[in-house]
Length: 588
Image: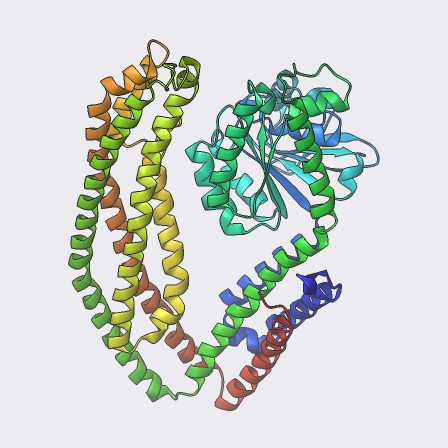
C-alpha cells in the first residue's frame, strides 16, 4: 500500500502506458502480434484512460425498495436522488459536482433534455419519458454539495427488478472505485443479495465496500437490532470479508439534516444515528482521503494485466521463431496427434466423473435425510417451555422469525453439500488434467490454462447451482426455485398468515423433505454437466491456443525474414521487460 501512496505510482502507470503505446504503434511489432491482439491492447488502454480521468466514482447498489436513494439524499443533506419511484420510472442517476445545480436526461440516442428537480418525481418523470424519442440512459444531476467535489455518486435501479438495465448497471460496477450496498433490516439478506455479492462484488475486490443495513428504525428494540446486525455481519464476513457493515436509518438521517419530522424513536435512535455518523466519517477518512490510492491500485491492476498478456504472447512467438518452416510442419502434425490423444483421454475420464458425482449425490441425499430428522426435532423444540413453564419462544418471535429460520436452515444444508462436493469435483478435474497433461507432455495445460480457466468455470458452476437451489427465502418471487420443492413452498406461503407457522411446517414436513431430496438429483446432474463442460473447455482451449500459435508462426515466416523477426521481437521484449521491471516495485 505504501508504494501506492507515493505519487510516483501514477507516473509509473503513465510510463508503462507510454511503452505499451510504443509497442502498438510499431508497425512491425503490431504485425507480429496480430491486429486482433493490438486492438485488444488499445481497447484496454482506452479503459485505463477513462478510469484515470473520470471523477472518483462511488456506486450505490441494492435490490428495489432498500432505500438507496434516501441514503444518498441523507449523505448529501438534500433531496437530489429521486425516491418513491416505481420500476417503470426508475433511472440510473449520476450525481456529481456543479456550481449551479441542474438536471438533464441523457437519452440512449445521445440527446440531452433539460429537466427541473420537480420533474424527477415519479408521476412527472413518467410523463416526460413518454414524450422522448429514445429511452433515458441516465439522469445527469449536478449540485454544489461539498462532498461532490471529491466524488461522483451513481444511484442504480433495484438489481432484481429491471433485467433490461442489468448490463448498464454491470458497466457502472466494473468502472466503480468503491461500492455502497443497501440492504433492509426488514428483509435480511435474501439469497439473491448473497449471490450478487458473491458473483459480482467479491471478484472485483473493491478497496472500499460498505454494506448499509437500512431501516433499522423500524425494528422494535435493541435486542432485535443486535440480532439483525449479527446476521448481516456473519453473512457478509463469509462472502466479502473486507466489507464494512453499518446499521442505519436513511429516513431518520435525512429528516435530521433537513429539520423534518423524524421517525418515532423506539429506543434505538442513538444506535443508528451513531452508525450513520461513523459511516460518514469512514467515507471521509478511509475513502475520500485515500481515493487516489484506491483508484491507482485498481488502474494498476488493469495495466498489469495488459503487460502480462503481452509478455505471454511474445514468449509464444519467440518459441515459434526459433523453428523453421519444416519444424513448424512437424510441430503441427505432432500437435494434431496430441490433440486427438487428449480428446480420447478426456472422454475416458468422463465415466469416472459420472460415477464420482453419482456417489456424491447419494451422499448428499443421506445428509439431507439426517438434516431433516434434526430439523424436525428443532421445530418441535421451538414450542418448548423453560424451567419456569414459560414459552421459550413467544408467539410473536415465532411469527417474525420461524419462517426465515426454517428457510435459512434448509439453505444452509444445501450450501454445505454444494461447497463440500464442489471442492471434491475441483480436485478431481485438477487430478485428471494434471495426469493427462503429464502423460502427453502438455505441461502448459496445467501450469497456464488450468489455473485461470478452472477456477472461473467452477465459480460459475457454483453460482448457477446455488441460484437454482438456494432461493427458498425469496417469498415466491424467484423463477429459479427447484420445480418440485417450489410447489411445497408455495403451500406454506399461502397458509403462512392463516395459522401457526410451526403447524404449517410440520403439516408439510414430509413433502418438503421428499421434494428437496428429489431436487438434489437435478442439482448434481447440473454439477456433472458443468464439470464435463470444464473438461471439454480445457481441451478446446489447449487446441485453439496451439493452432493459433502455429498459424501465427506460419504468417510470421511468410511476412518476415528471420533477421527482421529477431529484431522485432527484441524491440518488443525490451519494451515489455522495462514494464515488468517497473511492476516488480509493486508486490501484491
